[in-house]
Each structure stands twice: as C-alpha cells, then as structure tokens.
Length: 114
Image (cartoon, rainbow, N blue to C red; front, side, top):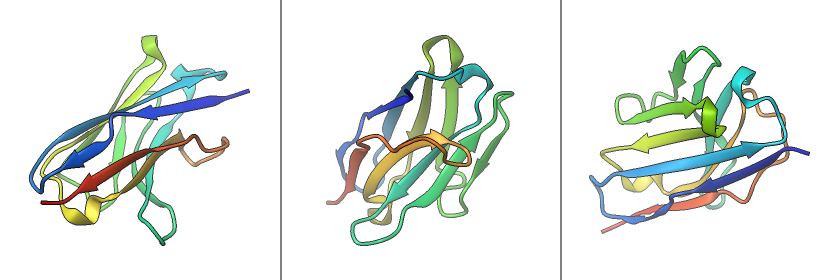
C-alpha cells in the first residue's frame, strides 16, 4: 500500500519562501516520476511540477521560474522549493506519481497572505 505524506506548508507573506516535502512509502520510489499538485479552495486540483527518475523537470507556467522540484531517492522524498510566493499560490499541496496514480495523501496547506 502506497503512502504519501506531505509536510512543510504554512502561512507566508507575499514574496516569501517555503519548502515542501513529500515522503513516499510502499513503492519503488527511485523509478517513479513524481509530481506536485495543488487544489485552491473551491477549485479543481491542478498540476504544479513533475520530475522524472532521471531528474528531468517540468512546471506549470504559473510557477515557472519561482518553484523548483527535486528528489532524494535515498530518502524516498520529493521536494518543492517555492520562492516569490503570491496570494494565488494559496492552496492545499499534494504529491503523487506523475501522472497521478496513487490515492491522495492529506496534503499540506500553503497560505500566502499579508
């Protein structure tokens, strides 16, 4: 059974930074393409960023140049470094395979507000 545990969210002012972590268990993490997704309140979940097993990355246009996805296979963990945060980044952030395949974890809330 795959388990996804996201952490690192919080309340930040515009322009701030946060680093999210997602620890994965129950699957061969090192060979899996992983992704970060987010769901603003009242809206559908959307793609944020992905990283292949080889380290190739892809980003949604809305976060390109501000967010960086990375992975640490030895720890079965994928990260999302978020810089220059904007109020429109406010959402619950989730990780999953890319494309999404597993049951979703609890996510971590990111709120950007002054």
